[in-house]
Length: 84
Image (cartoon, rainbow, N blue to C red; front, side, top):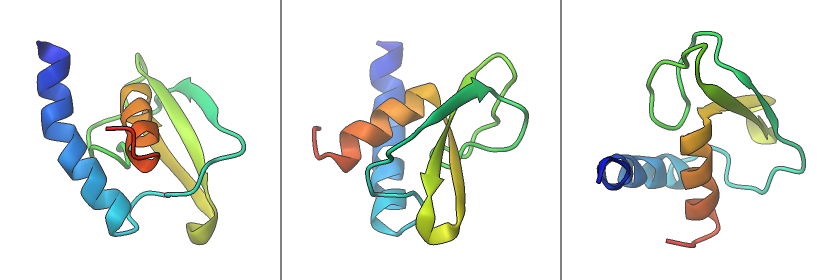
């Protein structure tokens, strides 16, 4: 139930970010994962805690990386592939 609520609130926001270019849309050839070190998730705008796994996705058009929670990464991957 908790996960369903999480997805219900995050997915529309994530779709909006994908459609408006606020998140990379292209498939990433290489993805990095590490504990959070502060900062904000580019997908959900929540804090990246040291106890959370954070994925860094290359964002060529911005010449940087998008940093997102592992759970947000799974939603990002599903949404950008159209598997919803």
